[in-house]
Length: 90
Image (cartoon, rainbow, N blue to C red; front, side):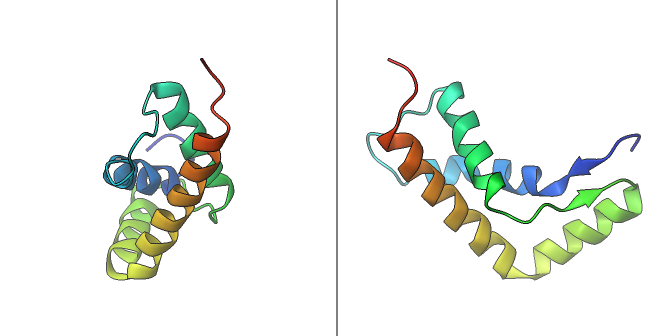
């Protein structure tokens, strides 16, 4: 790993499709998905990693602590509500 990354982005991306599949009549174009991800990430605590060891630690920590999944799913659902009510394209 040669860069710093926010592991929370990986978690949001991991759950995005399954959460979206539970909604009806929500646009799933790439622009709306990016908006949903950005809004969700703005409401979640970032988890920056810079090393392989850091990635392993964070991945293990989030896997064994179900609160992370709950927080991510809640943030995605809130973001979907906002994007659905304020679609920024035709």
